[in-house]
Image (cartoon, rainbow, N blue to C red; front, side, top):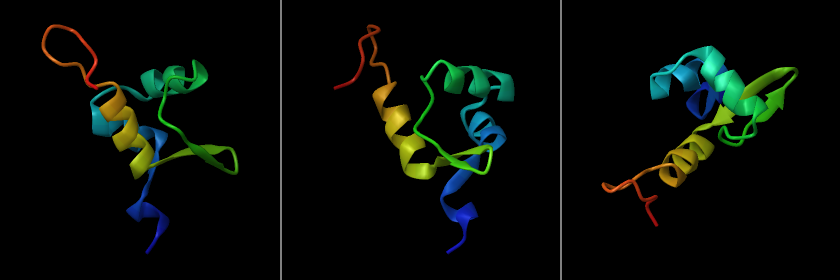
Length: 67
């Protein structure tokens, strides 16, 4: 198993959710991004953290967060 199997770069994370890299960087700086690790100076996002973040930010119809 390689790191590519479960770690996303910031650009890959942004592309995965259909946003820009600057958006992902801003989210990280505001501490609103998925949990990440630093590999040297590079933030890397575990696949699990992205899935948990997406679940936590899912909105049901009516604008209410899902449980």
